[in-house]
Image (tube, rainbow, N blue to C red; front, top):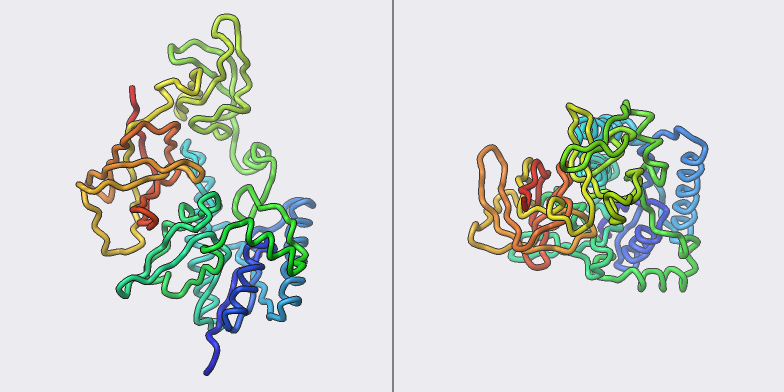
Length: 366
């Protein structure tokens, strides 16, 4: 019997490396694929990509699997990064990792692996699970809830899940680190990657300044009093505390400042004090560009779902009310801090990720 062929996306980290090891143990014909999705614009970034490729080549050699290399930099620039910049210009805070997964990994990579390389399945090192129930495929949270990445994968379709394997979704990160050290993986102690998908840990304000104009303007309080100058609205997001550039004062007290609103037309940044300030909280939101993993899914207005508006956020219970034009109004059972237009809100029913959309507008507490 011929082995099923799996092409696994390999990044140089231990998650994809250990996933490749697991797939081999499960008797698949495994081949790796390293994607270059960003053209180096500085020496450090070039070194990082070269280092990642070194790790991938080493692991593939150790596991005796063939490695493919492909450049998707043009696709990333055209369909992910340009969209990212466009949303920033409008004053939103987009999440490029979600779009990168949708366009690069589960469109271009998936199509290339299946059509050009003859793959039966593709695989990634995401901390999620796929489960078949009554001939339908569902995306479930990873067992390790501290690492669960279903928030980033809500745009996947049920049809695609039939062709995707997530080998480490049933494991905890501590287990993977343990086995990576036991099997003497060269990247066993490698830190988890952070920063923008495929761009890495750059100085983000300096990075943005290279691509978008940045104009200084007034920082005001809720009453319109001018408190100082901001460095350009592209450098601030709702709920931000750090890098606002204002300390406490005798007049205002020593409680920290938070970004409340951005007025793009007037180039004004409004801030408030104290994380408990009700201006920073929302009781609901309006979502646009809704996508359900199961295209035929019809949410029940009477059913209680849970929702995340940020990756690391604890889920809150919510109720869905339908609007027109592929928009949904959602009310939370308890207020959420710093609901941010441009970010994604993702729905869950128990451990199942159902889908989500882009936050168009928050419904404030006051």
